Image (tube, rainbow, N blue to C red):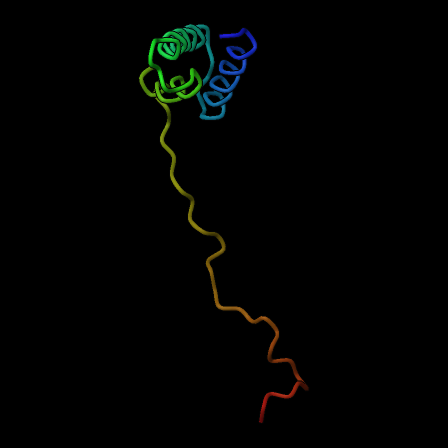
Length: 94
């Protein structure tokens, strides 16, 4: 694997973790490097069908406890509205 490819995998996984709310301490970075090591070795194995990035993303839950998420409620609540077809002075077909 080329260095630039490995840097891209690192960047993608790192940003994924940061955006997921994981605080990247020294221990977390060490865990990330272990994850990448395993992913790269698995992707270079004979007969491997997935890339290092795919393997790294798939194994994140094994190394990091990702916070759960909830889908927010729709706000404001949906209500029936008018599109302006009943304008004053328009021919309503009467």
